[in-house]
Image (cartoon, rainbow, N blue to C red; front, side):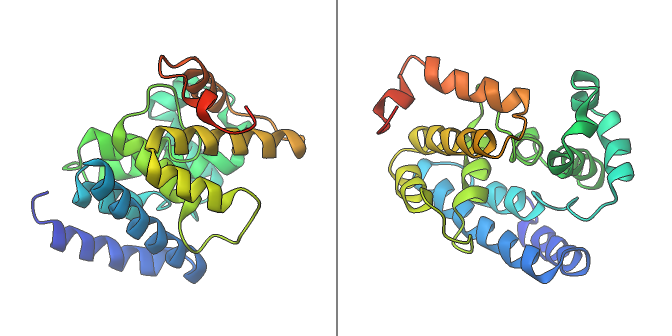
Amino acid sequence: MKEYKKLRGEIIDRLQKELKDSRYRHTLGVESTAVALARRFGADEQEASIAALLHDVAKYVPAEEQLEWIRKGKIGAQFPDIDQYPKLLHAFAGAEICAHDYPQLPECVIDAIRYHTTGRSHMGLMEKIIFAADYIEPGRVQFIGLQEAREQTFADLDLGVGLILKQTIAYLEQNGAPCFPLTQEAYKHFVDDSMNVLEKLPGV
């Protein structure tokens, strides 16, 4: 990526000003994990670094401003009830903000930011990496299934993403929370994939 070091430095300066300390530490954890996954599975390590650093850039943008950004993009048109999913807004808004503020970024980086909380069917390599890295980064508070997800992801990225989707949907169901349509589609895609990804997972 052209002028990667300069761009990373500018983004780090921005994040230190805009994110809480805990969120900033999480972001660095996602970056280190994403770079390791990129190296493991043959993706561009610099693009993985930038996508990871920017994945939560909109986390503390006010909700109404997030919605304004989302309505300018394809997610707003596709899901007019997006305001019913407040915890997902930062990902969709962040993608629009990054496309505006960093027009030099490739679409795979923007999409990785856009879908890092929900996933989607037919995710590209960079999307899978950021989706997984956000879930398994080393600073995450331990919970049942986390270590398994880490090990599975580094062994086989598709299996790891499938397991993360499975765990996410189970968590939502246990807590009576709605599951976003894109996450449902992502899960269905992995279930129906020609490789039968989830059939390899224990307990499925």
